Image (cartoon, rainbow over all chains, first blue to last red; front, side, top):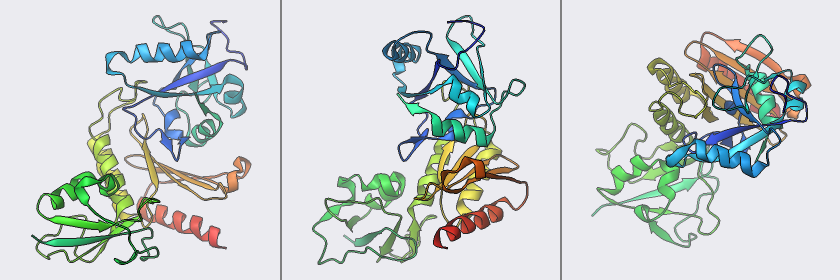
Length: 123
Length: 206
């Protein structure tokens, strides 16, 4: 995994918590899952299996067992709807990345959030 | 012991799939079934704690009702959500209950930095939901706004992001993102949303 570049084939995972009760409408992910103030936090697959990724999400939500499900989308799909997968990383999590509206704008607009929700799939 | 009767309906326009007493397979105590979830638990708890309320259901193929009509309710026992012999919009109650829950979210409620909702935002959300002619599906976002969504069977989508002082609109006809139309409302928001929704459902009928 290149820490400075996200390939189109890489899969980005976003966890959905039980405390987020309305992330899905009629069984489909909503745009609300991709609407945060400062870019949308995701985990890069980094060559891991999906099982390992889900396990890392579960352990991250600790004893409260607040993990509900995850959605995934490829970096290429993100770019196809003109969003910007940013390999931002952080000290605690080398797989951390963010999806931004563009290279200069973190906050994803409503239309792009709708498109991301349409393209993503539940794990 | 007084008995009140609820009929579960699937249309706010009228009792189109109303089941008469002689057609319904069973009568259940409200407190014994999951119907309370549909109507808003706190509403029926209030009633069930004082009365024996009975309702009619479709039996095996129960469909989530859109509204509920209450007959025989003593005039003295009305509530903010219902009046005797009036239709109660269950979708509106469900949305108000969701917003009430959103009001208690703390920072990072979604695990990815989602911000808590401001009091003003919650008030705005309730104000709009209470005045909508047709209720949407709603979802909280991580940025102090509420997503409202309407969808037709032909995959047409009408979506709003409502904040304290504006509403962004996206209309996608028949799943064709290349034909998407966008707009922003900064005044008379609920009226503009109602008009957009009328046009949205009006285009389905045309």
